[in-house]
Image (cartoon, rainbow, N blue to C red; front, side):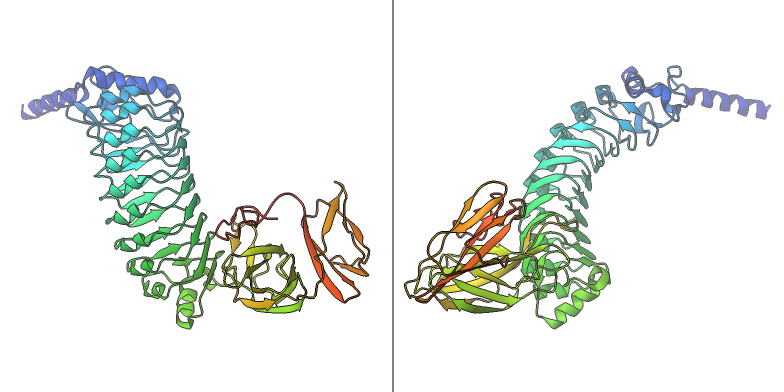
Length: 513
């Protein structure tokens, strides 16, 4: 008798659970998702579209009482769009539709999911912009939109997600700058923004993310300097800023990151002396905690070099640094010409060369006299100078874009030399260009001898316009006079974006001759 009563009770309990009623609006939202995302072809659609009261048994649906609490259809071949009807899940805490074939935009109606704490739409084909309305999801702790085709800028409204601990927007087509408002995410532990098209500088406000453990901003187009404010992120374990266009020096404040295990700064345009403070980063992992190759960094600090070698991936950070050439020497002088020579740098495996500069002593206004390539080159004439004038002279090394660094990288200036041009009354020869293909370079005037950089000794030479390069010719005449003229043959392309005219050497461009 007792067994019969127990069996009857179990039947009643099972029947009550199977037919627990959820609001009609929530059932309609589930059906809308099924229809919008090609439910007939899902990998698992167990119990879907069953009778009213069975919704909590449908595959991927978890209920709490009489409401849908979780909806998880990961890797289930959803194909179509996310319907706006999902706004009707008043108690939903988890929405996970990652790794499917969903397309279209993210519906702004998701903002009405006031209890949502977990939202994962990664690895789909979603497009359009990120709805700023997602900033209204005050309960959200996890937001992952990785691996879609999202475009436009990151909404500053996401900075309102005060409970957010995990923000992943990587591998999309997002552009514009990183909003300073993200610095308000006081609970954030993971910030993943790599593999987008983000530009502009890194906001100093990111230094306010006191709970942050991982910051990935790599593979973007970020420029400017690394903010010293990042040195205040005491919980930071990894800082990945590689494959950007960051310039300037490494801020010494990064040496305060006592918990840091990985620091990746490679393939940027960083330059200057490495601060000794980095030797305080004792938590960096041996042999792979540091990656700073393909920049223009240097140091003479033996202790720091040994430390960096021990932490650097493959224990080699120096061989790919674009550093200034040593032993700059002044050669022959003319009224308008100074010949310079130097020791070629050892980093020659990637394309590049040297650029020569002059400035009348005391002015501080530097003017480029041209550039030479490849990096095995070690001499170049500066022409067009004023007679009887004292000049400061310097050379820098540049590395052209290549597979390991898409930036044009330049070193610091070499140690300066000083020279005074002659004042013997010799005229400045001028090279004239004629023709299109080929181009004829010639000099007018009664010079007695000519020696071109090509080795030819006539007053004119014929050159291929496709071989973009500098040409120069040294001429002499009785008097005696010996002078050099130089000219660039090729497209209107320059290493510096100001075309060498202003003397502003801070405007390094992304093009090469």
